[in-house]
Length: 305
Image (cartoon, rainbow, N blue to C red; front, side, top):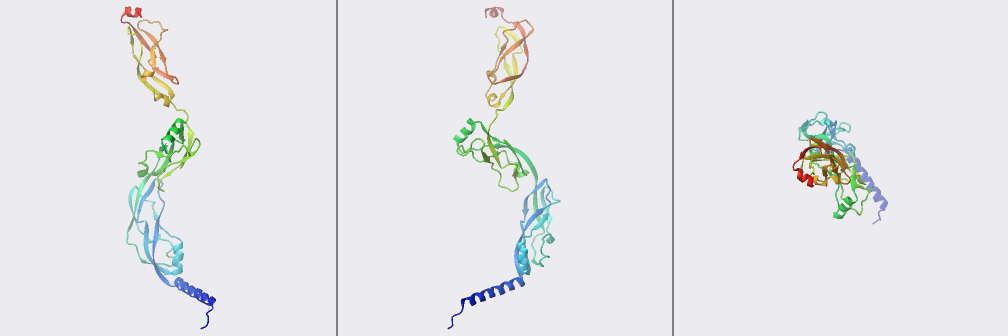
């Protein structure tokens, strides 16, 4: 038996393969395809939350080479959202919205069994939320607070569907770890895993906090005066200024207010007050400025004092 040349066998194989592909490309074939639904002309104030169905199932027929070209083009069924409104919208299915069928001379053998496409729209909104630092452990939190660190910016704007945005209270950071993070380092924000929600920034910077100066009112602080005297009114209200961290710790008992000892007491005459403030606190205003001296209840006690 004669030995067959291997090169002839390889050549014959490729010739057969070529003939098979040529027949496949030129013969008419039927295929089942899924065409994704894409959207167009979405109103800026609305956003689609759900689309049903997500794709169109068709059985089409045509030459093999043209079916391949049509598939490679990734044609979509475009849904025009120009006239949609908030809530549920039922948009009529129109086969003409599938492009490329006529171009490649393809015929639809089996149409999809649907009349309308459901599109649920929500209002688009933009809100500002505080950044909430999260800590890897108790030591990292203590380090953060003891070094007076904070995030910058402390608030960020988030844009997305109202249904999703309304559930937010704040935007958390990735856990702050004192072993990895320090002043001037950046840390990522934990944002919703949704393409519908976007934020102006994706991370914040760790910075040294500046003292926050605020004003706070302390109403109806009792004036200290001898029991033998009668004054009116007996209370004073103050508005003071200082670091927020300090003012939050103060109460009315931290202010010492008494009659100015340098004033001469005359009945039914106003008397100035001597106000002693805690260190780091500035007086902005007081009500009243002075009190009226009504007289001495027991002159003997007053003289003894």
